[in-house]
Image (cartoon, rainbow, N blue to C red; front, side, top):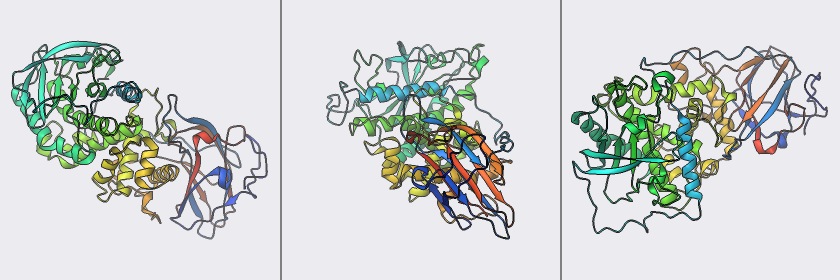
Length: 536
């Protein structure tokens, strides 16, 4: 069913007369497998009103690998030049812009968790292997405890620090490092964090994802606020990059020679205010304003490790989906926490969503082809990747949860399983991953497109009108009339290129072909697909 010619770069004309013809009504779409339907597709001649199609060549590979799944590719439409590059995004929404986040650190932690969970020699805390105790041992105000904390942003070694329990709630115990600098949190600040976690963050995350473990048998999650987290970003005033806090699944596995830094308990690590440190200045309002969103994000990771690894004996969730779910937790915080709890930003939507998830997503949409959905293990952890992870989970919740805004039925199902990654997604949705990725990439452009109505509601987001948040909209496809188009690039797992094909009234058919740069078939490892929809 492929083309009869041996088309390669620079060869004209492109002839797809023996390729598959795709006659779609306005609003209809297909996700086409080139190996089944042919690398060439033909759009039929236009009628008196003309026609317009969105054509998206993409990789739908769902396997997370150390180096990522990608392949160079060529799209030809008779040969020629591409349109102008996409417009750069304009600033979004709130004026309180975030520091750049060194997400490579968090990606490294997720990869280390997967290695620890997959080690057949591991020892586990689980429902059948809890520390023996006749009753819960509560944390007492004023109690001192020594913790192991990552001593560098590679977390290959650990240092000890002593902290004191300052504020204790029904679900959280907040310890402050005894060596925290002056000008930091006071008791009122800590009690506000305790109340926020007890009343909102805990309920939001456990409703959406399930319960955390309690391997230290104290009934609470420990928050350790320590300058050792600040020290992970020693020159943040120069770089603008800072690690705000983290969870590490190694704490939920027994301490051993292979796991020397375990605190054998549920611990979230957060930075402290350090307003007089010229190398890494952290004002108090910034530290307190960032803490809730970081906490709700990292708590999902803690729950995920318990659900996948401790309770069910499986592997830790793939990093891309794990991060997408944690950013989804941030969105839930922005939707469900009252604005009175977010005084630094004014609204909780600004604090939890508009200051992170949305600008990250728009950065991805401005350059879709350049970033992965299923990022590699050696990823530097870009904000664009975090944006695409969130967008995909957000879209899944819109279409496969009974409460499509909150999406908690789907997110709980994604955690309550030994399956991970794309296999997990397909199992919980009942839809092939390649189809899902193709429909999602169409939705990324078509959502709330003026004058367009899709035959399937999967070609939109139900929960957001992203176009209303930024003008021009960051995803700007190439544009061609089909007579002269050629583009070479790299297909990365989950991403591709958006091309608008506009046919003038009574214009002839348009031929498009997706191949390797030399004109051959793309490797099956990238799971190549073409997502196609008729726009008008």
